[in-house]
Amino acid sequence: MIAEIPLKESSGVPRSCSPPSAPRMRTATEAVAELKAVDPGTALTVRAVRRMIATGEIPHVDVGTKKLVDMRNLFAYLSAGNQSGRAQSSAGNIRRIAR
Image 1 (cartoon, rainbow, N blue to C red):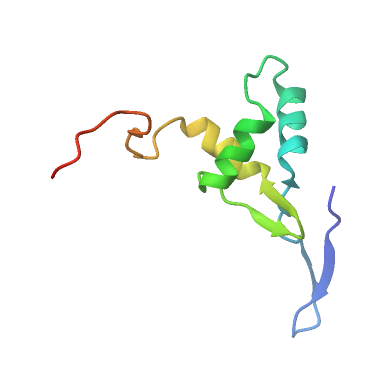
Image 2 (tube, rainbow, N blue to C red; image 1 turned 30 degrees about the horizontal axis):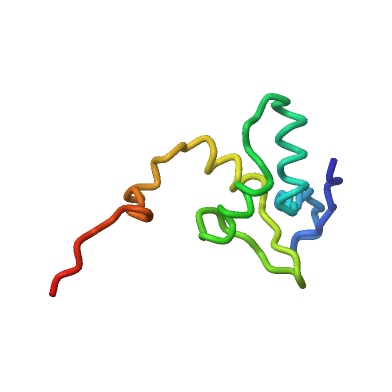
């Protein structure tokens, strides 16, 4: 739990201020481990989270060689389902080349 920090206003009357909630940044492996703790039957894999990071489906922060994901963003993405409006990929489909 984050302790409240007492601050003084210009009138000299102290008031309490709670710092904003800090992001819960995790690597892909740590994120999946945390998801499995909440839902042991989850089908989400480390590879899937890494793919979501690489394609930009979920935002991440580069820290050295690590890519960190905020767990709030990951939960929000998973809760929303496939509502991102992204069109289905045509990768792997054969198409005619115009000459």
